[in-house]
Length: 208
Image (cartoon, rainbow, N blue to C red; front, side, top):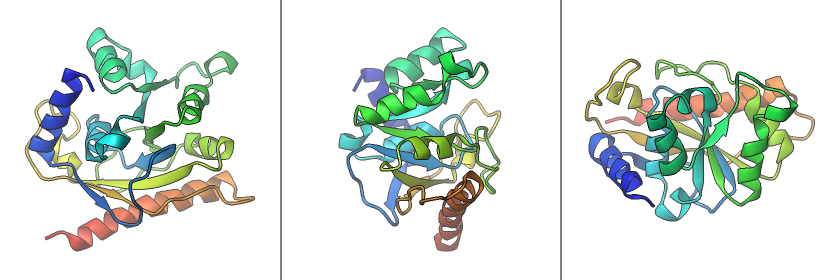
């Protein structure tokens, strides 16, 4: 792990806590796909920080190439610190298939962090999932899909904020899922969104 990665890991723990709660699954070596709610550009850092070190070293965020390659600072942190998998979303064709780099990472035994909503929400209700998670599950049906609810992060670094506000966050991991035989895209995405929503509702019920 680089010095910059260690510094960001410490920051995540001091500012937000990044408490891991393995609600219905256990830490396990990859490949896995962790799919979570999306409220902040700090989402993947909190999820990444919540993983045990042995998993953290082999788990990479799938990030939008157009945003994270926009300038040298973003490229450095995404590419060199977090070893992100850059996903093309503006010029998708055979030469720029967004699935290819993600499938390559999984085939090398790594895990991925993805945000199926595609854009940040308000932290209370999920937006509809994009189809990328379905295509990923269809291409690698043996890979475990782990639902994740990141709780309180929208209050730590809300949309538009530049400085985080200290507050304990929890990263909640649900039961593994797979694409079911003959399950269509609509049903699959609805089922997985419901799994993430259920984790969020459980967090609200059990807060104290």
